[in-house]
Image 1 (cartoon, rainbow over the protein chains, first blue to last red):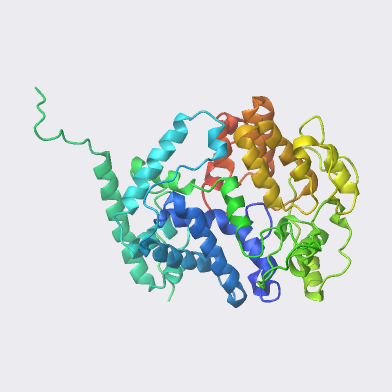
Image 2 (tube, rainbow over the protein chains, first blue to last red):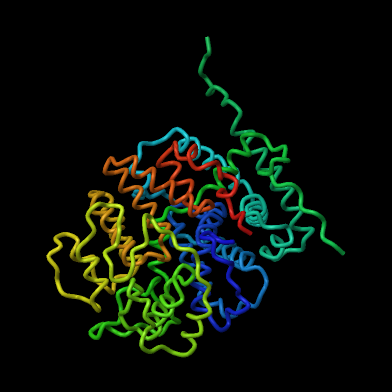
Length: 192
Length: 273
């Protein structure tokens, strides 16, 4: 089942209908690709461009895809493109305020603010991870891939993927615990 | 040797993850792009997402890139054929209600795609407009040029439809229509709603139907028609209970959850595997 209830794409036939396949891949997976890119460290202001890059790669390579999990394949592309993006010297470092109409039409809701805070907290914690651990953590915990798929997408042995997952969990939990801790008073400020 | 069983995910109910970690992960799982952003990405993809305004006699030829058709899973087989025909042959013929007729000529491979592509359920905001008949739209007044365009071939004559005139071109792609709606939403939600109505009429089972509905709900909210917005969002979620746009609608209409049931688990992530 896919986003709109359509049957999942049968990419075994992609070789003969890759144009149609591409369109369906985008429709079914673009939101998840975008989300994965964000958690893999692509800034919000760059996410659309990088997502486009991913699908340009998909467009070019779809005809060469032969079976297996399309999501695993897509996430492998995401990891590579996101990694290349983060290494670019000219990637944007400032958040660009975008006009998001849906949000602009409604008054800010407390739930929405809480969600944004939680998202910021998550991203800061993920920033503590190196690329390899981050990819494993994001794909398993957020994108809900199996560990076998995670290992395939990250190109690592299964046991290595497990090791990275457990290590990543510790780092993320510690980072969140630090974030929850009340900040110490600045030096020199008296509480008296 | 069988691989070891996966550990419980931190988001699983059985996980003993701290509440702060769980809420952070939940926020991450719900962070999906808005409809407008997806439409914007789609519009920039090779070949033009949904065909785009291409291929009339005076248009320059398309670059030699593989064709990217309209999203076929939400189009009928005939419409898929039309959309693919558009992308491949480069004629400006769009999948409108009159696309029920097969395109006059298309490559055999495209015909095969069109006949084999599965048909996905269509979302009908109110009642599906029928070819040749005025669309029954959310707004009381249907767009006159919508009806006209559905009955006439590739009309490019100017109409007297005022500010809506530029959008009623037969060759306009789905994404282009919705981008217009998005632009209008910022300053004129009524106009935005009218443009989404046009999309309903032009692409009743369109690939971007979900995105259109989110824009329409936003427009209704912008016009202060909250009850209608809520009703439309409710219908949308009834049709697409696991839509990635669910979270966005719940932000727009906070009391939406109570009327549509809690589908958080199914909408939070790609649980559609």
